[in-house]
View 1 (cartoon, helix red, strand yellow):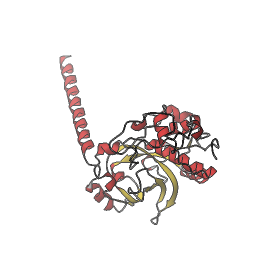
View 2: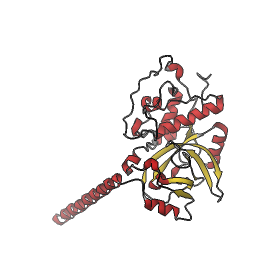
View 3: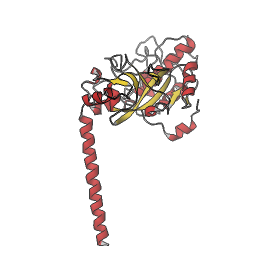
View 4: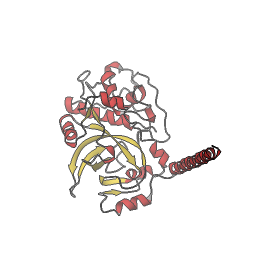
Length: 305
């Protein structure tokens, strides 16, 4: 018995040492720079990569930890996935949803009125943790049940503008005020709604049909270190560790001159990042989980016009 107890203690000690080492390594990694010449070299010298990497000036002073803070997608709870019809601030989940719905209002009703990310970010209690990440499908449910006001009524809380959602310094989630900044606008009358919220089938043909018929959709995917270096071409993960989930607007698809099928997506990191603010990712192989959770809803004509 004593011998067995001694073995247990030794094993426990070894496990504790291993965990501590991993934690120390993780902290070192978090404090290191996100942009690395080695990643640029590895991607650009790989003939099978299909895309070009660069030291993006947008992230020139970012650590891995700071870059992770702008990746704000939480995995959708399993029970929500089962119940949904198939069809400086980590606020990408809110931007992706609001931008897709804004485009759908324009497509269906000719209404070119930007909607408020701030309303969704601050006031959706069931969407997650605001600036610490949220659930895309919950955002679309919020559009159905609560609506979202216009950007003119409730502008984004960062007064400098959004180089990334929630640029440095990292901000806490803004307070939900439920009052338009301009006195001549009323909160409830500024609300725009979605009539439904749904997940699109994961098959590429179904995703394309949805975008073709109804407009852009919101998608989420896992971000690796190399994605921060994206400049042009059809992205596929080449190197680097996984950093977190990100959410963006999928607006179209195509095939490159080299014959690679791709999705075309709009990022929220402004035009200085990537290919004028856009990027392509390989289509049909669920790269980085890009086809796993495609979310959308149809706009309501309430308060339109």
